[in-house]
Image (cartoon, rainbow, N blue to C red; front, side):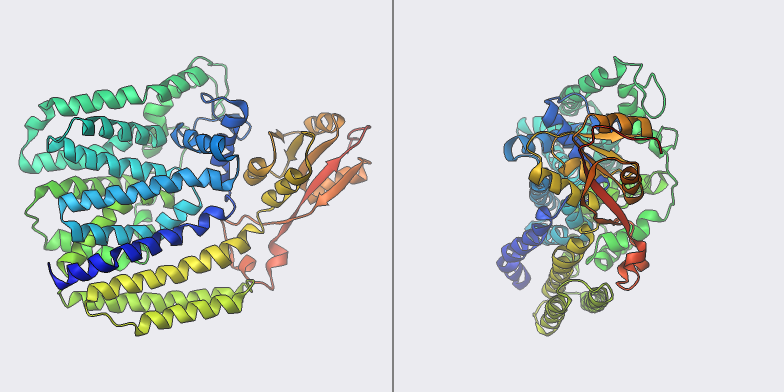
Length: 558
């Protein structure tokens, strides 16, 4: 065993524990709008109505995503109650499982040392950690994909039959999370590997056909739910039209329709989008990933072509994402286990190469740039406890600068983790708590929850907020017209979440209403410099009202 391997084996569990702990604080922060709070609300509806078949969101039948992530959150609500931690916890557990499968895949394709490096990289990659805080479908999908890949590797190596069952189960869960498009990610690398090695006889191997058959069997609950909710009810209006087939959407429009831009949900694609997205999303390891890709393309002549199940899957998925017309930054997270393994293998191969010292220099420069950016944000935004945040940031930067380790790889990993500690302490203890203060729906909903003991009706009008819908007790009625508002108010008492303009109008109209709260609101997922600037912030904020209405007359004509 080399000095590097001994050293890595010694500090691996400590860095891994630190990386996992860095992901934990985000679990206790509020669920963030829009997608996270929307998904949390859909799962809340499942539990409140004990309806595990029909999905509802935005006040209507909801078809955009399959059921699996919502089922996981709903099970958690059943056990822990409906709150933000219960929503995020199952996704976090899945992410922990993805660390294990990333290790197993890298170990079996390379060795234990590459596996350790890969896991350390993946644990603190920026958008992976953000996905554990702002939970959507990605933690579930990423885990199911890398788990299915490893079990498929065991199928290929003719290990115990249980791996066929496990691979099919994880594949089915991935499909029930994102759609059948994931089969391209799962199978693309294998097809390239078989083409390179001329193993086309694998297509006749009964194990793969049993795997596919079981996968189809395991997705039958999803197909049944879609058929019950949509195909049996052609009168339902979905995406602005009737006669919408849930099965067609699942097998085609949800993914292929987006890719070809022919489905009901359309986007505008940019072929370079995921190139520049990866540069920041995979921080602090982006430079290492770029170097790994260059090395793989120009120099690597891997003696084991089986590694193409990872290489091929990575390339095919990235190209398909880039060519798609529907692109969002968090999509790239499913590539992170593969990116981490590629980067880990490169760092292992170059552990004694002078190029690694240059990468350490780049990592140090990145740490300084990030330190400067955090200090600027702390004081420009005038965050609470900015001085304490600045002290912590500077101490971490100087500590990482003066700690000297013998191996360049160890230096690289320690500086990367110092950068991650600095970044996630800033985000989870200073920046996101500040932002979430301006997610007004959360504050308003919690005020209702603290005083609503009589199941008083709650509604939202002209100020829709997913976080309000999630954190408010019971169902929240989404009022879309003035007539609906008048009818709702007549069935008083009630709570109403609305804009300041609408609230003032109701008060002027003579409605007996009490302003319980007037929180300030900003669309915090679309940050602007004027909002971050403390001196200009007030001009960028809008006021929302939470009204308690106890009016026997009702709404007068405006």
